[in-house]
Image (tube, rainbow, N blue to C red; front, side):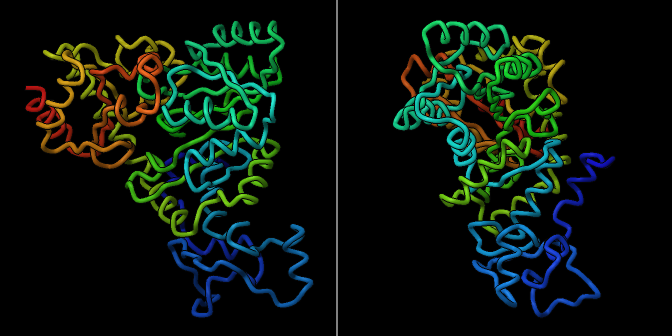
Length: 412
């Protein structure tokens, strides 16, 4: 990041005038009312769907990449370019692609690099939507998938050997930095080394950790995916996805995303860039509160167990200390009494809303077994850790005492 700290990059994200300067031509100037003597401090929103040119020479130069500029919204626009520049710097990546959703970003990452007959080795216990994509939708395209019980280099190495002995063709590995909802930590240093040795594509969903909590690219080439709807935006008013990585890996994704219309819209890009400017402030407070809440829940009557990598009791705590720069703002806890206990707990909450997402400035609670993982079978849900009594809590920016007070009265 050219010597700049993460906080500086984020605080200055979206400072305006950059789009016109990057293109170097009048074809994308912000508008007739702007003055060359001054530029807007906040990034303008470019809602145009098409750009005009002075002559055919300019069209050819821009289209062939000889001159910076924009042609048509689906092919790229100033708000997308400004957002992707910040996202790439946050992940320490050569390039980033902003998509219309997190699932669109993940789908692009897979489809751009795999073909019919290829096989993905994935971590068991992924987000339910990801598992459905891997097992149901990709199978229509001839891409198969198998799951490994632990996101460790040793477990994946064993799985790869077994597949090769069967004559299968593994081409990619997929893990979550922090698994949803078990919060298991992926052994990214060993997995990156394994992918490099085997010549496999490593795809890492970094949504829960954010670039502030982990930068997977520090250990080697990979495609890092985010549901930017969550912490990166932080205000529940955008649906967006991100893929970041080396240019040679992101390039095919960009061609695919522009061809089928998976790229982000200008207003969504603008909102996401605005949200990013406070990510470091929001996430620091959320992580601090999450650790306090998780510690408070441990040993609480009626709470069977608490899952948070910042707790010494978490199975991944030692690995978290080695891999993460922060433990995240999401925790899970299991209530004694199963679904009936969860229903009673949720009904008594006063401050914390039931909402099937996360990463908002407000603390939210959800029930994975009936939301994020409801499309899975009972066996698959339990393998992912979405037990009948499990509740997932996304900690917001409220006063921690207010969060604890509401949990206290709801737990009874």
